[in-house]
Image (cartoon, rainbow, N blue to C red; front, side):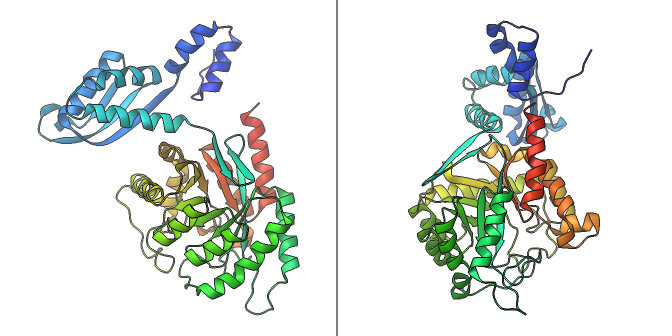
Length: 401
C-alpha cells in the first residue's frame, strides 16, 4: 500500500494508465484527484455563508470567521477546500447566485486556470522562449564597478575590461548553459547610488551591439531608464528587465513600441533605502497585488500580456525571513498567470544563512534555484551558470522520469 502525494495532472493520469483505467474514466476522475486550497479575502458574510453551503453540498468545505456565521461581522476571509471537479460545479452554481457571487465565480475560475498553467511561449523576433518545457537560465553580465557580488566587469582600480574579453566571458556563460543574457550598467545593491544616463549607456550599449552580432541568444537590458532601454532595444536587445516594475511610463512606452518582453519586479522603496527596515502586513498578498497592478499598467501602455514575466524581487526590500517565505510560497504567484523569474544568486540572505561572502555562495545559490524551479519558477537569474545548469538538469531528469 502506498500513500501518494500527487497534484500534477500528468502524474495522476500516468498512475491511472498504469492500473489500466478506461480513458473515459480517467477524464472523469482526474479532476477529482487534483485538490486545492483557495483563499479569498474580504468576502461579505452573506456571500461567505452561501459559499460554505454550496461547497458542503458538493462534498467540499469553506472555512470562515466565526463572526461571519453568527452575523456579528460584515466581511470575512474564506478558505475553500475541494478538488477541481467540485470547484467546477461550484462555479456553475455561483453564476446563478446574487450578492456578487457571479464575480467570485469568474475570479475563482481565472485563479485556478492560471495556477494550473505550466507552459508559456514568448515570441521575441527571431527568438521564441518555450518556458515550462524546462527551466531557463538568465546569465548576469554586470557592466558595473560596484556589483554586490564582486563580479562587476568595470573595476575602479583598473582599466575597463576590453570588449573582446567581455564577449569571451559571455560566450563561456552560454557554453555553460545560459539561455538569456542580461546586461546591466547600474548596480541595484542596497544603498547604491544612481548612475547618470550617459555613463550607463557607455557601459552597456557597446556590449549589446557586440553581443547582438556575435551570439544567438536573446539579450536583456537590465535598466529602469527609458533612454538606456531604447538604445539597447535599437541595437539588438529584445527584453527589458526593470526592477521598478515600469513605474516610469516612458519606459513602458519604449518596451511597447519595440514589442519587447518585460520582467516586472517587486521592490519596496528604491535601492538606496529598500533595506531600511522593510515591513509587510501580508507579505505574499502585498507582493502579488503589486505585481498584478504592474501587469495592468503595462498592458495599458500597450505591452502584450503574453510578453510579461513577473519577479517577486528576492532581496529587494526584504529581510531574511521575507526571502525564505517567498521561496517557500512561490507557487502562490502562479495565480498571476505569467511565468515567474527568481533571482537568488549570491544574495545576502544566503550569506546570512551560511555566513559566507558573495563569491562563496555558489552552493547556496544552487540550492535556492532548485527549490525555486520546483516551486514554479520558469527562469532563474544567476552568476554561476554552469553549476546551476548541472543542478537543474538533474532536477529536470527526476521530474520527467
